[in-house]
Image 1 (cartoon, chains in turn green, blue):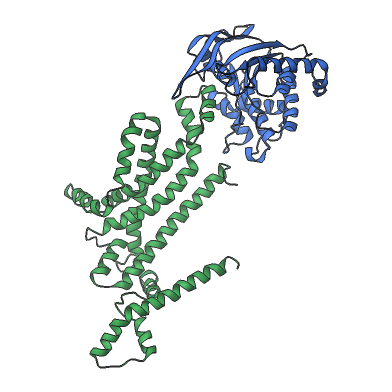
Image 2 (cartoon, chains in turn green, red; image 1 turned 90 degrees about the vertical axis):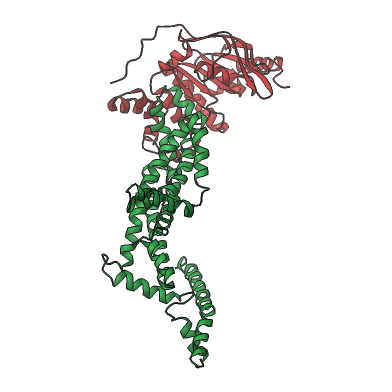
Length: 287
Length: 268
């Protein structure tokens, strides 16, 4: 109860601000409509109208909840009108990209830690790769891959990977380098091979760093998958819902897709958090 | 199964250094960490290296362990080069910090060098139980390092260095970070352990009472350049209760160590 009260207070404050903003932003359209039809509106009528428009500038929270209920609970998940269907399309690309990004990130990190040449040559490129706006490069990836006959999930997954490998590289390089000089000397006194040093010292020492990176990478993957759906005229996925919504001024649809994306991200990151706790507990690192 | 180790030739002289020099090149010019160091350590000796920081005592120990390469001069460990001795697992090294892996239990930490060296599971378990008993930590095998006090962690780290039956124990200020009460207790235990196992021990310290209490020989070192200024043969008996530290004999040796340090301008 002690924990719930502050949370509820914040949510309540947000809702108040939200409803007030919705009134403020949607008011003009309601007044214009009334003027055009030669009607006058009382204040309660005006308020009620601003919170119930079809294409409001800012939909009221309950409108989004109703839209979410209609598209999540009341549609079959296989239907193209189901938000669950669209969320799954995006999530599958996200997970594929996350998996690829994790493998690529860990491989690069191992290379960077063990090879001086790679440390010098690869790291600057890894950093440079993240300075390019993903929105600029996403359409090119899609178009080029389409030209060589690759379409569907893979191009989106590649964009996801592009965003997600970076935090993994940075975190894993730091983690694999976290053993102290003393710990490495100790391995040397036992005449341990490079593989033994990696498996018994560097890898376990990097686990806390890896999990922190995985969480960031998962969120970045989802952004990548959605961005990958935007410039391509994709017909399915949360990105497609966002795009279609903005074409037709369906703000309620946009907002409900946004909320769905947030929920998917929270669930995916939460899942990694659970795996993290279980793993670190097994390793005795979680006290 | 215990992996095969090349048979050790029964060398009387365990460490033999002559005209040993080590110069580090730093941004501020060369630093003479060791200059013309000559020393012999015989089998079964307990040799302490004492001196202020920068006198090269840790560097010397690291040269024995093949963790540093001398610039010139010769050093033999068990009659062979330090690198060969290291690869032959001739010594156990105890660092200043316990250096136990937080993700391994005490037993798992002691097993670590045994896994690396290829002992099979039965031999590992046998050795772990044996050395835990030796350092008085029986029953703590399944605990994690953070569940143990600093002194117990350091004992576990000594157990780990003993586990693979190296005949030489190199210890770099192993009790430096512990309080004096714990340190006294561990010193007593270390002497008992040395008597039981007949190891040759090289022990770096900056505590005069600790050096005098533990050693059969005390090597006094001085900085700039790092060198040996005195080697003192202890006249104390091998059997040493803690109370021996109030005896006139003990105080006389401590006095000579202090004189040696002063002669080397260690107090400047």
